[in-house]
Length: 333
Image: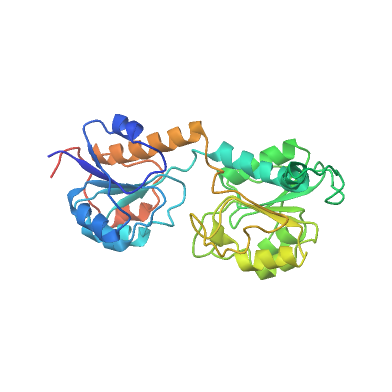
């Protein structure tokens, strides 16, 4: 029996890399965004790959022969992972494909905000020429950057900030296994971190615990000169609270790459605000990172189809479930 993989969605024009890795496997793509269509295809596939679109339990329950779901990305908040686990389906992700890109984008947002790059460009495009139009600017070297979350991207941002001469502070619910670098000052809480830094940069996954974590109470303790940077997941920050804090000048601004959806709600209050730079979830993107993403996600599927565990399993508890779907051999049912 020819193996079949459902590619729910992808943000690139073709699937030549996926076909190269999954040689001899049929790749199926839906004709629409309709969940019922996905559910109708699902019973015929051995694996599912998904990029941005939601993958709800209805589709997973219909995928009765599916052994694995592979996410084109780091987070798995668009997948019903609990349902997949109950069904015995292994969910994989690609955790390190865009570390440099997101770190670079975060630093770029910081510089663009602090040096008024966007505002100056818009001013000169309109025919004006005034290098004092947006008030005094501070030297970035010597200011402090707070890293919320100490994963690969958080550490990459911290390393770059340290090299720029910034004072780095950080908070993580669990201390690093290898300890904090000597040049990092660790905070004991989100509020403590937010209260003592010039820039608060968010590098956390979206979970029940992190949803709305940066809320009104966190923003209230920040300095009036501070800014928020978010290239992680939009719902970690309360958009209404952040827009209000900027509007009331309780903080100086924000650099945002992720909002409440892709694309965000047209009513999102952060879009079009002065002192807020919004980019369209572009931080991950480079020729190199997207190729790595596609290859690693395809190899995660290939591993399962060949009888091996994939890399970076998002639900390792599935291996202890009696419902675990067999992939210990490379033969078909």
